Structures are given as C-alpha cells and as structure tokens.
Length: 167
Length: 454
Image (cartoon, rainbow over all chains, first blue to last red; front, side):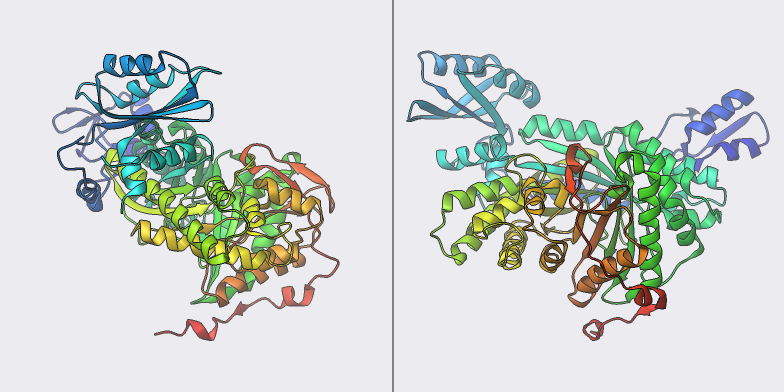
C-alpha cells in the first residue's frame, strides 16, 4: 500500500515480523523505535529501509529551470566571478599581499582599480575563480587577511552586483 | 564586467555599514498529508515531515551566505495552519502538535516555526475551537512556535465573536507567560486579509493554494534607505525622496530575489516570493523611525508622520515591484514599536501615542505590531483595539495585523525588556474608556460594499 508515512501506530497494528515499505514512504523515528523494541524489521522492496530524498512536489522542477533564466555574462566569468574590495590605511605592500593571496587561492585577477579618498585607499579586484576553488573558502581566507587599523577585505559574488545594478 | 567603482563600493557599503541583509529565508512545508485520526500519529508525521524537508535549510542558507557574501540572518519554517491538519483527529487539546512543531524546529536549527494557526474570519470549525483553547498553553510551553489567526477580510467582513475570543486568548497567553513580561504574546498575531505566503514571523504560515514546499525570502534594509536619504540631504523635494527610496528598494529586492532563487535551487524546491519589507531591529541605524525623521518629521508620531510613512511604504512597493515579479508577503514598511529604537524613544518622549500609531497603520504594510499595553487592560478594550485595526484593513483592502502584549503587572509608561530582536517596550496607555456593549453584541460585521466586485 502506498503511504506517505509509517507511524508507530502502524507498526503496532502490523501483523508479522516484517514491514515492507514503499520507496517514497517516510518512517517516523517513533515507528523505527517501536519496531526495534518489538523486533520487527522495516525494509524497502530492494533491501533495508533508507529515508528517501525529500519529494518537494510537482512544482519543484521549476526551481532549476527558473534559475537558468538568470542571464550570465557572455563568455566572461561564467558564474565564477568574485568582487574583492579592500579598504584601509595606505602603506606599501597591500596590493601585493592581496593579489598574492588571490593567486594562491586559485583566482585570476581580470580587472583592478584603486583610488585614494582622504588617507584611505579603496581597491577593487574583479576575480575569476578556477573551477576547483570553493567560494566559501576563498572568502574566508581573503577576509582573514585584514586586521584592525590596517585594512579590511570584503568578498562578494559578482552576481550580487549584476543583480543589484543591472536591469 | 562593466561595474563602476561607485557601484561596487555602494553594494559593499550597504552590507558592511548599513546592515543590509536577508532577514529571513523561510521554507514553507505543506502538512496536508499529515492529517490522521489519531493525534499522536499526526504529531509524529508533522515532526517527521518538517525534519525530512527542513533538515538542509540552515546548511543551505549558510552556504549561500558564504558564497555570495550576503548575511542571511534568520532561517525559519512556515507550515499549513495546524487547525486544518488537526481536524481529522477530533482532539480538543492541540498542545501536543505545538510540542511537535517546537521539537522539529529545534532539530533542524531554525529560530521560529510559524503555523500554529487557523482561519476563523467567518466562523469556527471544531478544530479552530480546539486551537484557540490550546494557544495560551502552547505558546507558554514552547520556544519557537508562532501562532497567527485570520479574523476578518474585505471579502467576508469581521468575525466579531472571533475577535472577542482572540482578545481573551491574548490575555490568557500574557498571564501564562507573566514571568517573561507576557512574551508569549510576541509569538501571537491576528490578521485581517491574511497573507498566505508571509515569510516573517509571527504571521508566517502557508495557505491552501501553496505548493508542497516553497522557499520564501524576506529582505530588509531600513539602514540602507536611511543612509540614502542622509546623502540626499534636507533640501531635495518629496519627489526626489520618493525616487531615492524607490531606487534603493529596487536594489535591495534584487538581492532578495537572487538569494531566494539560489536557495530554492539548492534545496530543490520551488521559489515563492520576495517580501521586501523595511523591518527594523533594535540595532542603531536599523530604524524605520529614523527614516521618517530624516524625511522631515520632528519626531515619529508628530503631525506629518502618517503622510511620510505613506510615501515610504508606496515607494518601497514600487521599487520592489520593478525589481521582481515575485514580490509578495507583506512588502512595505513595518512599524514594530519595541523593535525599533527610534520608536521606543518616540514613545518614551511622548511623541508617539497609541492613537497615532493606529493612524500610521492605515498606510504601513502591517499594523499594530509589538505594542505593549498594561497587564490589566480589560478584554473589551483589547477587543476594541483589535476590531479597529481589523476594520482599517477590511475597508481599505489591505492587510492589517495586531500583535499586542498586555504586560502583566505593568502600567502605562513603565518599561519592559524582552531582549534580542524583540527589544524594549514602553507600556502605552489605551485610555480610560472601553466598548463593553459593542464587545458584548458579538456577531459578524458584514463585508463592506467595496468587496462586491464580482
């Protein structure tokens, strides 16, 4: 019988030492416990019971197709772009430090600009990440470069800027 | 790539200095398939389904935060109104279901779960009756569960019996949570023209037309609007003010849309809506009140405040509507008194009265929100306050809500600290007069003439 859930009550009512559940059936933790205590085996048609992947319903397929409609820039960064900004007090070696770190993390600097406002510099790097680099790791490492009274690094995905500033 | 430095630094500044964030990613989960004649089995199914679908929510939100560099503050779950799910069980005590929701919220690591709810804008089912009876205990016992009730709509009018009963539920909840300043009432809200895809608590739940699971996003940024108006200065005319707010709202909403779609895609669920609401927090600068004062009223609550708020709410909606075709939820400006430092100050200084607050709710996107009143407020006064607010929503075809906290043991002018996002409240004076006969009449207030559109 197709059922969405197998509950403790279902297990108590079941006759026999084995319950075979449908591939889509989710067994509640309470049912598993009751079965364990009573020595009843719960299994799928093909073997032991494993919780199925969540079935998000018929509309779920839209999630993927909709995301594809977000226009990615022609050729350029292919969704692997990062914008790194550095703000801080001016001193020799900041540019070298940051760009060396970007290179070490598998990033390629596509564009760079720097300007001074009062005593502070603003540096912007447009970076393309190699396929093997993880955004989260790169962000953590780069943001850890800065420290108080020196400079601060901020790393954001290029898509954020595209979404915010382009119609 | 073609971004100017100015554009890049504007975005970075919004996040780093102006507290721009994704306020909430809320996963809606339909619980229709959890109904069972046995309440215990219903609870099991509800718990299991929420954990089954919600398990990866926090991890996915964190991964997006990491990858995009945008803070995602809260992760929440909204479910089908529990009275619909509990109906099959015939149970009179639904507190076990609140416990199941709470346990599931703890297991998946979300801060709130919304949906201990029912719709009674025309009448009560037996399950609605049981839910009302269970709310005070449910909210007192659980940490994460929020409850919302639909009491009226433009289409159906106001259910005055339900409003009166709800008022009593508010008082009972406050009494049961007296040791925390009536905090249970902060998790309890009623609506006219309820929104069925609201990602913000306490009103979060998903309605009958929603998908199996759906990811909704609430994006906020009072600090960003405030800074933009600061840069605009006091000499610009109101058209320029509206334009500035609109442009800023556009940018904020686009970010919400990006995060919402990405989160939905990573979770493998459908994307619902972006709720672009200026939702203040007690943090300095993250204040809707500050925006109103920058627009030019001396203090929030002074004459001119309602007009300024009308402009703000409208401009936010317009910017949002251009930015996303999926704008939904409440979208506009929230004015939760205890959560906005500027409003707390305005109440303390006598600038913002309860009456002015009610006037402001005619043009904001929600209603009377996080308002503290004395603990000994009578039930007919509470009914009157709620009925007034519901009537505003009914006649104006807009959503209005009331989240009011009668603070046990406190009188007008006294302070209550709820802490965290819920902030600090000054108890407001509802006045000396009530509406006992109006309250006692009961019955239903018919739908207004403007609802007959068919």
